[in-house]
Figure 1 (spheres, helix red, strand yellow):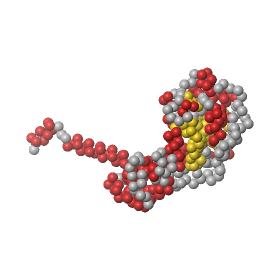
Figure 2 (cartoon, rainbow, N blue to C red; figure 1 turned 90 degrees about the vertical axis):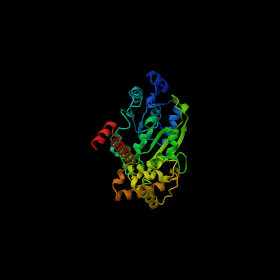
Figure 3 (cartoon, rainbow, N blue to C red; figure 1 turned 120 degrees about the vertical axis):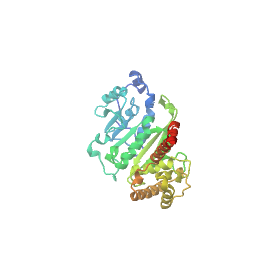
Figure 4 (cartoon, rainbow, N blue to C red; figure 1 turned 135 degrees about the horizontal axis):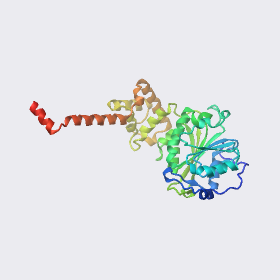
Length: 354
């Protein structure tokens, strides 16, 4: 998608403001769903402009709420907008927008985490992965409670070229807590470098477009909000299965303040942990005293490639979970203690029998 473009020629007719919609339908942000409404149309227009040129594009908006960004998308001369909203309270206000833009807005009452977007748009939109991105775009002001699990879910779908990415390299423009946005784009050596940084950047070009101050939302969250743009890469920077990459990255970052060999060791059973960790680091040509935040994508590629070879040699490695081993060890220890600590009466009886 182009970096920025003017909003389109189609304009919605005069409608109640978002504030009036909220008042009309007595809408309150649900704290348990971490909802925050963006009411400033200048900011929602900016989000849509930064998404790129949406003329004749099919847009999938997640979590439209009272419809602030929805209005800006409809004014961008799109082909069609599909919104998926879990909260039934917002449906009447969205229906008002649908009536004002005939044939432009489809409303689905559903959960974005389970909605089958790959069946939602026409087949002719699908493009080969190597081609330019399709005329499909995902936009959303995500509730904080679902933003991280949703982006991880979509990144996995991206690796499989499934879900929203069944159409090709579908771009996404999404909001996150500023801290999460900073993690998504964090570079090697940055304090914000994390699991999210690696998982997003090995599959996408990720750009933090701009930050929206918390005071622009109702109710005002305690944090600012970052708008992040994702463009899937033709060739991922790590060519291994998503779950394998995720396992390596998670283990490394679970001990983010330690040297990287500490987390990498958890990939292997305790009995041969030291030997296997040394082999992994040696073959991947990684300094064991590097901190997790100082590992580059090239480092992670080497680690994942070598770990994959080790798993091919020993298939049980792939399913090994150090927490399970620890749990079994504790259970075995308790069982031995229980067997060893007989009651005084039992001990006396054993003595008499002896």
